[in-house]
Length: 275
Ligand code: ADP
Image 1 (cartoon, rainbow, N blue to C red):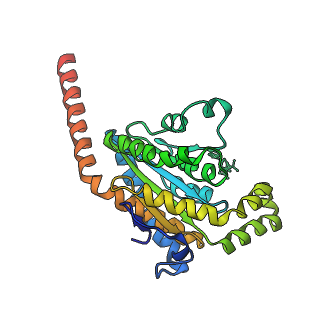
Image 2 (image 1 turned 90 degrees about the horizontal axis):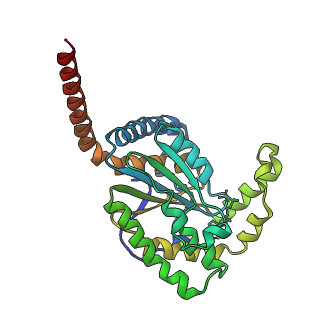
Image 3 (image 1 turned 90 degrees about the vertical axis):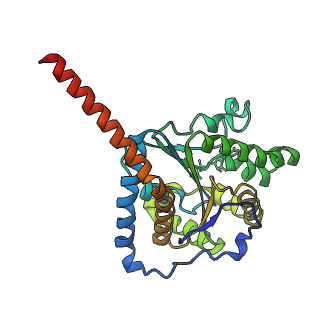
């Protein structure tokens, strides 16, 4: 697998993990490679939707400019729009902040059959909240356990949970921020806040180390995606989702065959009654 899969708690040092890997792939072969994965992705997601017994939650996290939007565009774009949804998590409103931190998140989790992408997520409550001391340490420390329990509840209820960290270097972030100034089409993305947050780079990396380390679980794994190369990022994310869904294919196909038989029998009984 091209992504670095973390499926049990264990020490993580993002600083030591390269951001610009290409997995030995060549850029020229990336469109063909992605197209093949996109076809499988679309098939598997449609099967999940039609079988209607499970759901898929894909969490996308990363530093500013890491490519969350681009990843969603590529991956969600490969799927059937019927049955998928994106939930974006911004600074909580006063009403949201008046509840526990998982309240607004739980409402956005996928219903059976559905695929939901989280563009930022409950992890912000142990990332930005921790870096800027928005709540006391004793409170955010408790949250790793709450997150693990929450995700366990989801997976026990039939949701397949995957979490992606798009890993870029500080230098690549600078390049991307500066390119927004040069490109009029991208200038709408300019935000002075991104430059301010950049000053807290090391604190964020530390917070990510801990979040990945403490909340990596067999049924809710983290995938670290070297994301300096956008074409590699998309292939690595698509591959991780395909590999996770593949083992479910046969079961979903059997469910669909069963549903098909029932529907055919209903139709036959109806026709008999009419004639
Ligand atoms: P994005 O950067 O995702 O494209 P925005 O520019 O609107 O979108 O940024 C959303 C902001 O909301 C980010 O700065 C993020 O840290 C912040 N945010 C998200 N969740 C929380 C939270 N629970 N507490 C505080 N800030 C949050």
